[in-house]
Length: 539
Image (cartoon, rainbow, N blue to C red):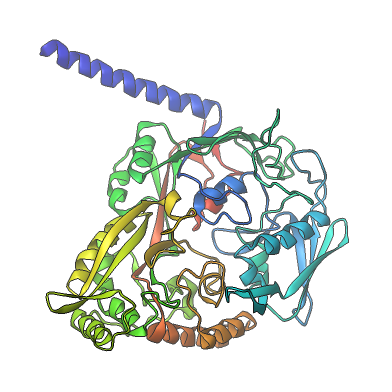
């Protein structure tokens, strides 16, 4: 027994020494290892989540950067001017920039990129500006952009708007607006032959040299990058995982240098790890619990939407899931990070008895679409509940399941891996009757409204259509006066209160961490947009 115990001690020391040596070797090689959940859609115009955005931001550049502070900064566009009437945006582009294949960056690449956003149906077109021009055979709206883009010369591009848009620059700078080469037809598609990554052709600071979607992506520094002295790293390796605990364990063991989006239940463990710097950023990040509202769906009846709200104790969930570190939400997507745009008034109390009364009323008039059943003589909602396993949201869903049971709502809980929930599927985030979706922070509040709540919006997962809401969203988009816009958002909050098919229980900070040897890393509130160009290891 004594010899066995001695062997175990030696084995632990060997493993620890090996891991420490591996970490030191990586730092000496100047390669940063980042732990992430697995990727889903990697087209830069469509990939919405942090892993996809980080993957693409390493290879491609933005016209305009959004700094962690929320301010705009030059990137491929060195300066911009807006006409007095707010209808013309003229951008001067950076000279001497080239794509990985050696071709020069010009205004034609910008024109192609933004026209491609429209062509592939990127959700950011809603923020840039669009209007409904008809309906498809299935009744879904058909949109056209309310702007056009043209090259004035090789290094000047002009956007012309049909109407003013107070957030247009943020649309140009959005996480979807990475610049691709003019004429690219297979963006981020693995190619046949000797150069499998020929279609990953950006102007960015790093170049993709190896990619296994279930395992990792390896990048090397772009030696021809336009920014002087950047990147400081010789490479970055993105390593993909199925769960947050394994990511944290990999950081602790020395196998990773940087991790993002640490769930609250793991934060205390993270804070006890020696040699690690913990990063926390206030954000508008929030889970959205939503009911579909299309014909025959669970949320078609407004009374059931209200029942779910009365059934949910948001203050208790903030305490249980985040130890009170979040800000309790009021079931609309505009949170406290937007200052005067946030409606802090709470008009939706927790009242399970009221929830039961509403469900009973729906059962009594026979308009429940099959989701209300009589169980032991009591009217109850019975429905599957699908949840993307992000942050602590799986734990929140378990709390909610128990909470709702006291309010005449019985849900079969399905906690789905993040990369599955946001992929194509019958019960994915866009299709499930009842689901919980992770929404990251946005630089402007208007983006939530245009991509998720306007009729026909690309990510309108609730299938909600409200004419009054649509009109207010459009009005807010052309209103630059802050007080006037705050009043519009207050009216929007009231519509969410009375008719909204969503529950937003809290807004949470985002937590990440890196080993102390990492220098110059400023985690973005949307962590996928973290800028690695000036990141290095200390000597």
